[in-house]
Image 1 (cartoon, rainbow, N blue to C red):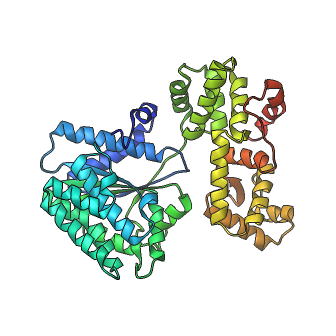
Image 2 (image 1 turned 90 degrees about the horizontal axis):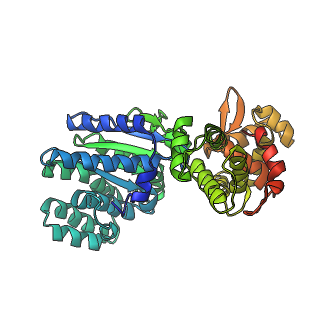
Length: 426
């Protein structure tokens, strides 16, 4: 599975046994003829994709151990952020990924399955007529001067069930960044893609759907809003940060050493148990210990965190900058939202009226700004007060957006004041 889930990623997989057990239970329910479609929710880089890849790996091993044959469950992973550029590209990618996993079980490069001409060649080489017939019909539809987009999308959505019925297998379709499918509705004649997907899904008995997305608000709207065609069709599974013991387990893998209880607790406190932050912080700490000669203690963890978060080439800095810029680009009122975030970075737990006074705007304007920030998952409301969704992002906004930066080679003395101020945020 080196093209999909390299050994290096597999070694870092930590915890998530409860979530895996839940997903594997749904897989076995499919084997018995029952479907419980599921959606995963969680912050960016919280570990959803790694969890799904581990599920694919374990499913392939489980089915291999069963010996294949009638009723084999084939996992199909596809990232919608890569295939939702147009209805035509989506349909090709959708059918291509199903063919890829059906024919290769992830043991070959997928490149030739993602172009309609080369896909046809791979299918013909396989000698599989049932696959070839659908791919041929899709290719003919794509060649039309004015493609019938609803028909193209319907062909794609129907393909897994058609293939499963003909081949005597079942499919577990795993869609990462599922919310990207909404972009297809912007194309002329595409109609309501979500409604078309739902209508097709309801007729299928051999396919289980597992959806995942990092845009929490957008995913919630698609799955849990009663106006959505997918309402009540999917159970919801939140993917949360690591507990302290799991943070310690991941840190141990990355530090090449078992951290002391104090070190592990400090890593967990500053990272919030977010796997990406744990990884970036632990790797920075290891380099500073092995190359810089630092002592591996709680103070070193704090200094490493400040460097990762406030050095412009730090991974945490780069990630926060990416999420910040991307989120504000998607929202309205860029300048006003920056100011709102800086207010909350200085003091969390403010009401909309308090934010309005701090910004010197009307309460209505402040409520709009806060709603827009909730829509892009930067801010969350709890008991009429507003907080950052991610405390590390709050720390970054409080410092980086005001021009506070440090060097990768900063000394303990250089970092002392910033380290002393960490308690205000964590």
